[in-house]
Amino acid sequence: MDSTRGPAAWLRRVAPVSGAVGGLVFFGYWSVRAREVTLQPLAGALLDVATFLLLGTAVLGYLLAEGLDTGSWVGWAGFTVLLQGLLYSPPAVCFGFVLLGISIARSKVHPRAPGALLAASGLALLWTVYYSSGFDRSHADLGLVSKAVMGAALVGVAAALVDLLLLEHDPDGHLGEPRHVGGA
Image (spheres, rainbow, N blue to C red):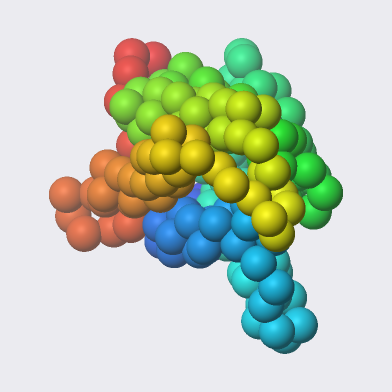
């Protein structure tokens, strides 16, 4: 079967770009949800749907590139937890990023640095959820340290996904073609 056609090949091609854009959209999504900012109904729905679809497409593409190697279940669990968290639970989003980061760092398909950055950023976001008074409330006073940690973690998530885009860039100019970075 030709691996350059079909839905899996399409996902591998669009995953890096979707991840980069999704990481930036997630920055806005998390900032809005952390303060429970009221958006116009259409704008809020578009932000939610765009974040869900872009991150979901990106992560699914990365996981399909990993295949079913030993330990890939960690990434699939992270994918499930991340998408569930985007719908219902900020802490679940954080755990999803941690699991996905571990999976990406352990895989022999993707570089380790973006995975480690994604896992560390997920832990930092989790810290802001639990140690910030008023998180997810309109009267939230996150405090200076929590704001700094949250900002750095959001930049870390976006950077990890953009880094995967740049590192997945093939020397021949093809985006999204999985390249094996480790030994066989």
